[in-house]
Length: 284
Image: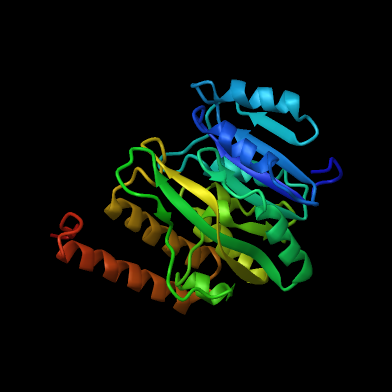
């Protein structure tokens, strides 16, 4: 990697990731690419030694890594990363950016070269993704591809994403910096997540999917979403999508309605089958 102006900015969001943060940073530093990369680390006042590890990396790679150590934790309930992401977004200098939580990592050294090469050659695309493998720290399940569908397409548009007929984990996506590092206020909301981030950017172009495993999503007790129950996680997504519909001024109303109906139907079916606790109406 060169020390020239960054072509890609990578935002790492981290809090109490002392066990994992080195692997996240190393996965970026080991990228075999012609494109200059910068790493923006948003550290949210960790108490487990994460800051010390980050400072060692900034001392070793001062031309690549910029670390911002929050003196006070900015997290909001059920959404610890949103405010840190909002601040990190404003610090992007690259033409493209990626987001990585400090407990996840990139597993392929060729990830960035492949994604940026495609985006540079195809100007009508604003994002490029691939498969993410989910691993379980407690070994409760075998590693598997995260939310992978059969018959995946190579090209997706805004309507696919609004209808939630596809989804790609944050660790897999490279975005074009179409907002010029100016984040909307909604990025600070506890309801904002990678679904809204990708939907927002796909208003400006298409997403290309590569059928390769190049990132790892780590499930552990300290993870916010992965520690939610199946029911709470699905309800969180439904409540979020209701807000995305409003935030985007109802431009994709029918698509969002389709997604909400499908997610609600699946929740009821899981409950009726006894795969999750029985749903109880608040009106009963």
